[in-house]
Image (cartoon, rainbow, N blue to C red):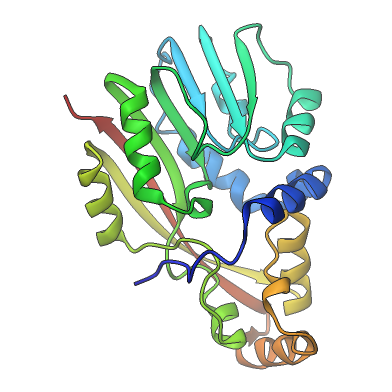
Length: 255
């Protein structure tokens, strides 16, 4: 079991946090940027006629979509602040349409390809979203996405004695959900990274600047103790480290 305990982060707090930090997101989201680059290697060439990107954010993955022509491009994100940064920083084709809102509830027309970079961990009902995307895809339509596994930030959760506030499933559970949702797996890759920071404070500030800091989960007065514990337990001569487990999937809708 690696799912969040009731998803402690509600929709309103997510929207507020990501919109508030939209201006600093690109500067601090280096991991998400590199994941977008790897996920882009799974894109078909040429792109199909209709493409939907869920959780497009400020456009880290969208940039890769724009390297190829596409007749219909739908860009969705839950945070209006993120979409504002995207529209101001990227030159979008006339075929592009920005759709704000929670992808778990929005209706999408039939698409040939759905993409999502580092988004699935935020969904409250991942299985339901997979089935919804499957139904929105045309015959032989594809879904490519990246997300995080249960080892992600495990040091932080151990130091704070907390469960994850987001859905972090292991590989076996992902395979089960994918197949139950009507997909076959083209490819599945798992990557483990250790990322170093000068201190736990630096790590928390980085998470905060991309709108994903779990500070609010820590009880009042416990943050300093948490940072002391983290620094003492997970420090090296290169600084403190955090583990990230990264998943990349390429799926095809079964007939």
